Length: 258
Image 1 (cartoon, helix red, strand yellow):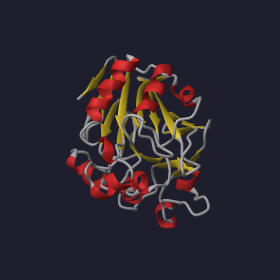
Image 2 (cartoon, helix red, strand yellow; image 1 turned 90 degrees about the horizontal axis):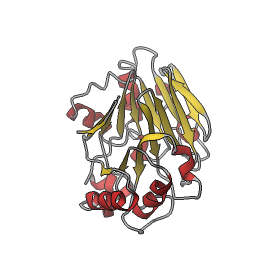
Image 3 (cartoon, helix red, strand yellow; image 1 turned 120 degrees about the vertical axis):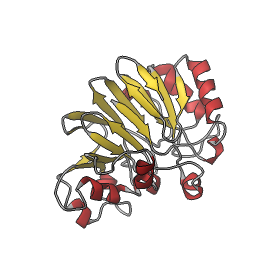
Image 4 (cartoon, helix red, strand yellow; image 1 turned 120 degrees about the horizontal axis):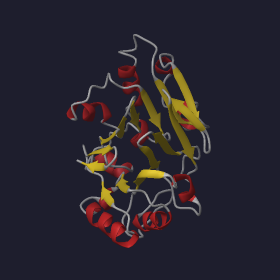
């Protein structure tokens, strides 16, 4: 399977300034999944040479614009211009159903053309065209936000979405072969509801994936993400890279970063 980063920026100001792209992540196995399609996802797919029409599922971890903004246009692509009912939309309760003043992220019109709508809750497992996906607990300002594990034959791809550190966060990702971690700030410069580099180091002292990928950078990470990744690798012994816009990772017998 292949992981394609269509945007490595995150947080309000990186999104508004577009210092990094914010298009989310593609997971290409037997099905083609678009994870957290933030602003510019549809444009970045074209830049990457991928047909948006070849989308089988859209997954949204929570209802903040840098994670869901292009979800409706991806649904339009997935449903062949809203002409057929197909595909899966999977997400947090806020994304699928709405919770108080948060979400949902799809209009009733767009939801009506999706073949399967699935709500993700911590500890719950769903199937996307036969691919098992497990949701994990987070602590974020959207209280229904989830982390994710995608259980591919080639190994588990874990995704720690926006969250602050809490004891036990590591347990859900113990089997991850590749672990993608959203890191908004460097060093110990943490802000509420998000991880910083020091938190990543704590996580990787407990979880030992073959590859850790730092992603979803706030403004303070721009220009220093590679240095922060090298520090994480040095202190944990876990191979760690800072994601780049349009970076690809092939996961097979070996893991190759392109």
